[in-house]
Image (cartoon, rainbow, N blue to C red; front, top):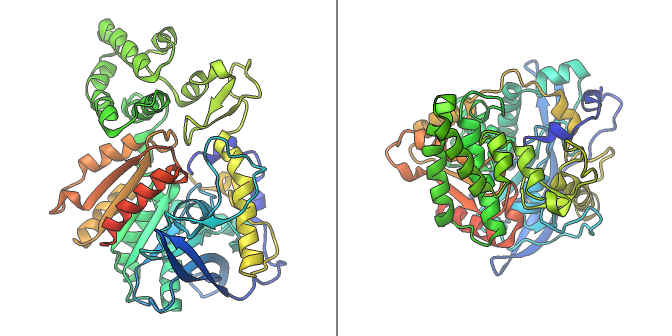
Length: 479
């Protein structure tokens, strides 16, 4: 998730307090489990364990906790390392929502924080294709720094140091588990999508580990291109418009790849041309506003007043204002009642963020401590707003795109799957569409596959979209 900071107020020092007085973490613990996946029962081992992070002098400075699901006897099965985003998110959302063998309902319309956090078999899990290792970066889950606040920020809370230590964590898990001969995949959601191609490149060029494939789920792939609502460039508006139109099409029961295609063509064509004309062509401005109102379903007078530039918060509020509700930036058709409907500006948190924290945290803590029996002291940080607030954003660039290019050039067999939900306004699919169209062919234009599904940032919580995601994964893993 990449827009946590908008709803965050907590003190960042909570995430960077000295950890010297904390008791040691438990030894690694494993339990046998089974799940029905794809119509067949799969027996596997669930392990909660720790990878130590050391500085250049060998001093222990952090402990990264992971959850691994491995099928016994499959030492050369593919293994996939999964990261969520934030920064400040644990891997629980990919684990218990997308591809892990068990899941808990969250992120869909009607899900509530008070719903029982009961894990059930995930029929769309990828465990039938690959072993899975879910990694919680420092400050998330039960992972922790062993340094003071200043050194924690310096060693962990920034894009460069993040890639450096997480790449080493992947390497250390492979050696610890004896899995260097396995095919290796890196998966990242949201800001994890910023991580994934960079970790893949670091593994290839610094760790000496080949990577067979990269999966980016609703990726935060090119921050400078996304820009902001005051940007002179039309790119932020071009990127957001198709996801706004998709939400309207879905509410009308008309959303499909065929109905969204002309919206994409308009956004990168006539919309961009009329946008750049500006005041030099009043007719272009009128034409643009009329078309945007048609595509989004918003009041034409409002769209005209805003010059055809609909910012995300306006869209989320105005689309559902008649119902006294507000949409989520992660899926604009997932709504909650607006507690301050007469306020000029939104004053409430995000509907999905507010609803997912309780069930995911409770379900993960119950699984780790009761089912696996790995009993750590301290709070499980599913979403650490403190880490997000402490993060160094000065150096966030388009390096994921550069690293993706380099990683694909390094290995002609490496494949890439980029997956998005149509309705996501946190990391809209149009950004990835434009990036892919600018990549070199690398000998085979089909090496990068863009998959679009009904839903939003966490489209996989919809069963049909999760099943379609699994089907696309089978092609990636060569099944």
